[in-house]
Length: 80
Image (cartoon, rainbow, N blue to C red; front, top):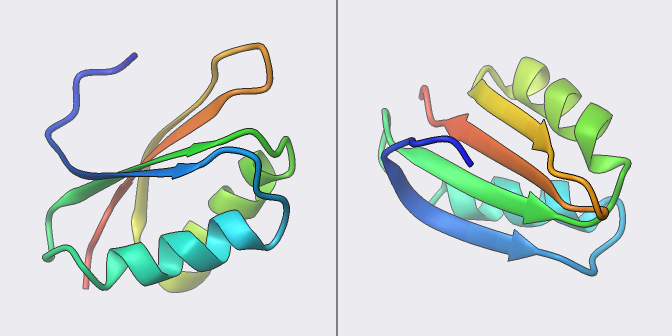
């Protein structure tokens, strides 16, 4: 696991598309610009979904990891 200064962790385990993206969008409203949200998902579709969502919204996808055993971890920095 990467060492990021995480402000909030969002566990979306067990949720399928589009819920990890929807919950990430809601969680981003709760943190300040420059802070990092860690999102954990078990949906393999979240890898391309989170990349596309970050590009569309302008937030920075600092890191995304496929940790094996259907666990995907994302670190998203709020930019605006």
